[in-house]
Length: 108
Image (cartoon, rainbow, N blue to C red):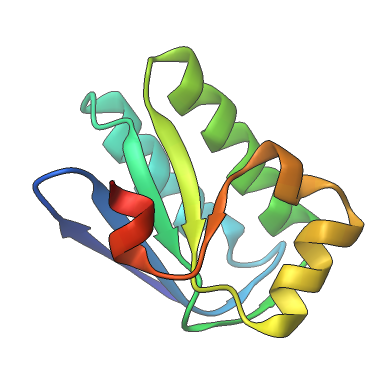
């Protein structure tokens, strides 16, 4: 999995590509931690190219979301596929992290 970061005027867009699991979650965590440490706490994670996510991946998103909120920002999720949307709903993460249909809507 690789992670791309796009600097936008209203937020940072982080796009993981591939599978987010216990072997790759550290890459996403490093990207999120780097943004948060730099004071960039308005983050949208674009899930459009994510093909799989396990509990470690979900935990990475939830922890980063809490950290962003504590700093006055947010972590929002955009463009989840049907599998990911169902997973977020079933495990209750959808209530903890806001989910949007598009990156543009999430950045507002």
